[in-house]
Image (cartoon, rainbow, N blue to C red; front, top):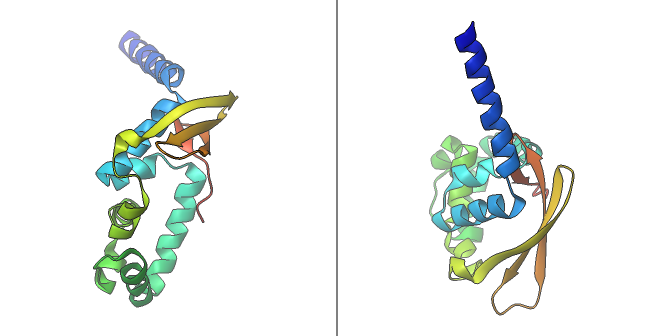
Length: 158
């Protein structure tokens, strides 16, 4: 009984600590780092639950037309992928295919150190993270929300 209570207190303390230490800028930096590593699993975990659900629906639709999807991926992203490979992808693998594609790589800054999370504004469990890119005048805003102890990208992609 006491051992279970101690385990409960330890779990509660770790959960509260992770929530207290979570930062929109820190979690966005983890996602950006994952993009540069083509780490689809980490990027997927950095998406809001709503975005993850939407991506799951896209995956279902992809299985209905793998030939067309493979053709689109080859033409638009310059990746070599077969219909059978498309049919076997999970969400994290699809993200990896996209962010590791020649087209995507040509669209992001050459070096990770060219991107900086400048600041953020927060209201409750939502935040806006401000990102700048070296040699660009614009500052980009990304909405994030706190879910399950981490800040996740809340921008709808679909």
